[in-house]
Each structure stands twice: as C-alpha cells, then as structure tokens.
Image 1 (cartoon, rainbow, N blue to C red):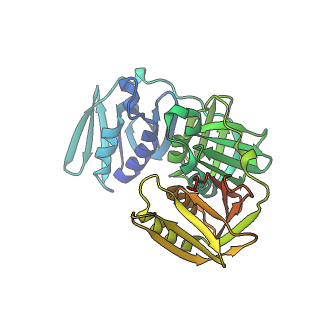
Image 2: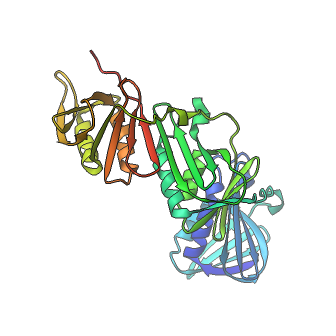
Image 3: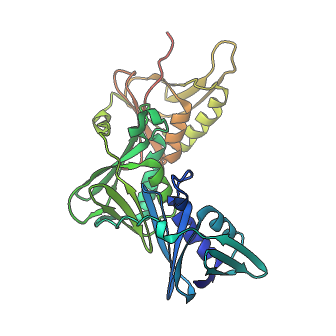
Length: 360
C-alpha cells in the first residue's frame, strides 16, 4: 500500500474520522483509524461501537490497500508536516510516513479485527448546515454534564412538518430552538448524545442530510458522514414548561446586559446569585451583601407591567445572553416570580432559567 497526499488535507480528514475514537477504547483496535486506499483517493474511518465517522479525500494512490493505524499518533504526526506532501507506505505491519527529510514509522494493527461500521441510515431530511450548527450551539450549553442523570446529557430532536426542534435541559436551565428543514418522509423524535452532536457541528458547512433509523442517527455533509446510536429512554416533557404568556416583560439591549452581568458577577462568590431589579425604566444588576464585596450597575429597559425583583445564577444568564444573536432580549416573568425566567429575542429560540430564592 502506498499513497501521496498533502499533509494538511490528510490531517483534516484523519482529524474528522478520529472524532469517533473513544479516549478510552475498550479494545486496542478501536484506537485506530482505518485507512482504505483505492485508485483516486482514501476512505478514512473511526468507530467505537457507539459512534462512527468516515470521510473520503483525494490522493495519489500508487498501490491500493488497507491499514489500521493508531489514530491519535498518526493524526498528530501528519499535522506537524503542515502543507507539505506526505507519502505513506505500508509493508507488512509497518507504516512509513515521509515528508521531505522527515521519516516516521508506525506499527499497524490487524485490519481483520476492526469491527464493521454501521450502514448509513436513510435520509430523513435536509437542513442548512450553518443554521443547524448555530441552533445546536444555542441550546447545547443547557445539556447536563452530571452522569447521575444521564438522560439529561442528551439532546432531544423532534421534527414536525417543515420544522426541526432541538431541546436540552440540566434541570436548572431549559433550552429550545426551532429551525426550518426539508423532510423526506415521516416526522422524527429522537434522543441524541450531546457530546456527539456538539463535536459534529463544529465542521458542518453547506447542506446537511439528517439520517435516521430506529436505533441509529447520522449526519452527512459532502464527503463526510458520522453516526451515533440513538439514546433509549424518556426525555423530560420540557416543552410544556415554556409559558405562552407573561405577566411582566422586560426588554433590554442584549450586549449591554451581557457586559453588566459580566462586571457585576465578578463580586459574586461561587454559587452566589446576582439580583435583577427594575424601577423607573432602569434594570439594575447587583451582587454581594453585608461586608462582602458588592457591585451594582443599571441600564435602560422597557417594562410592560409592574416592576420585578429576582435572583438568578450569573453563569446561566451570561450563557443565555452569549448564545442569543438578537440585538435585544426580552425577559419574561410570571405572576409567581418563583417560576422560571424566560429569555427570548431571536426567532425560534427560547431559554428558561430557574430563579434563586431571595432571602427575606
């Protein structure tokens, strides 16, 4: 087996396929990248039984063949070659990587022991890749990282007609975003691993096909495709928690509020909330009490009804403001201020943040 390709193209392809390699593979062969060389190009694949990634890249193939190489080491070496041409030649169980005067050798693993990748499911529909990536980034921060509630470490994907909805929650935050898509058949309702979804959208561009079967979901863009097992379980019915109306709505400049929250929260100790108060057309953010460090800052706002006072986790509010692309955000409050604070602004995007109890 022997092929030549520019190192940056090979590193890009190998890096994509390596996203499917587990940091702690259950068996040694699953730490490997399967490189299949045929006339005209390479197919590079990674797999860990739960997720897969595969891509194709053009290359000058002198001798076709297959090789299984330790993925992280191979990718790290290739990246160091920059944009130079690199030649990979395999003889027996030894692979030689040459670029200019640099020569590296690696031992290969048995290709026969690498498990077959799952077949790609049928296309369920298509979506603009940039729009989908932006939507994922607007809700992924609300997915839990606590494995004691593992179902919340995932994202719910639901389609209804020409609308695709993503939802996530960690019990203290709830996020929902709706985007347009083109369905190819039946509506979907699936639970997807948040880490897989977040990693996948980092390299998305152009139109993306959503692939789905009963137990496997996939995303294909151009010559790249990735799959993941669908998560079993019942996702919380968080849609019903988003109120349809509010007793008070406070509209404020998003960027200004984000700056104020960032400054005032500097004096809030870990796990200490900030307070939000409206009065006389101003929204005031303050933190700290007694002899502790204190901070307070105000900015203009518009209020539709009575003024409010509520306390929230500053990190949760800062996250919501950071991922919201709207120029202005509207904070929605119900008559019972102990209920979640609604944050809206961008079309199709909604966040809820649980308030913190204020001391009497």
